[in-house]
Amino acid sequence: MAFRRVFRRYPREAVRELIVNAVVHRDYRKGVPVTVSVHPDRIVIASKGALPEGWTVETLLGDHDSDPRNRTMAEVFHDAGYVENWAQGIRKVVEGCRANGNPDPEFGFALGVLKATIRSATPPGGQASECPIPLTEVQRGIVDLICADPRISASEMAGRLGITERTVQNNIRKLVELGMISREGNNRTGAWKVNHNEG
Image: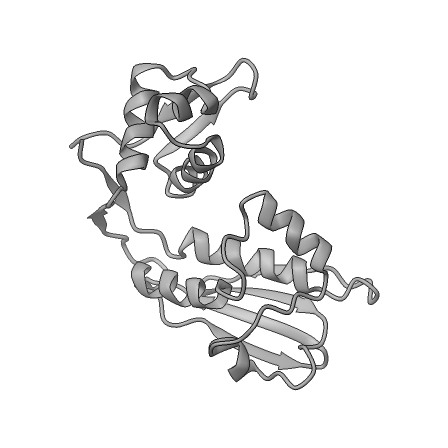
């Protein structure tokens, strides 16, 4: 089964990673919310809170240890599957931008606010192009199962594929982010839909 997608201006996983980072590292004593500003040529995500002692923006871009400001919150996001590997978030953002054709993300810290900027992969008004989506064997298996039974549950998929339910849920989340599948209705009575088919 071959799939194609329209390249988007911004890599979804990279944007999601930056938002998760902003929420986890925000200084909640300040009462200043995380902001996501969408401009014609860029997305800017800002979070109030100082960097860890001795850190600079360059530290974020290099190899570094994980030092979340709100450790309990970070662990909750990790258990939910939104944080996969500690201290790998910024690297994933850079890789996601490059894979999608965006310039490398920009980071700046001033007046106690950390800002991350992702610039558009195409100029405003430009046309996005199509490219094949490489799917893993597990992801192809999930799509095949959904095609055969749109109401199949994650636990049933796990049993059919011989993997854990959490692995199924993580891959479903990635397929949703890619726009490959979507959920219609609620978790109890709804069904899955494959959005991009062969051809």
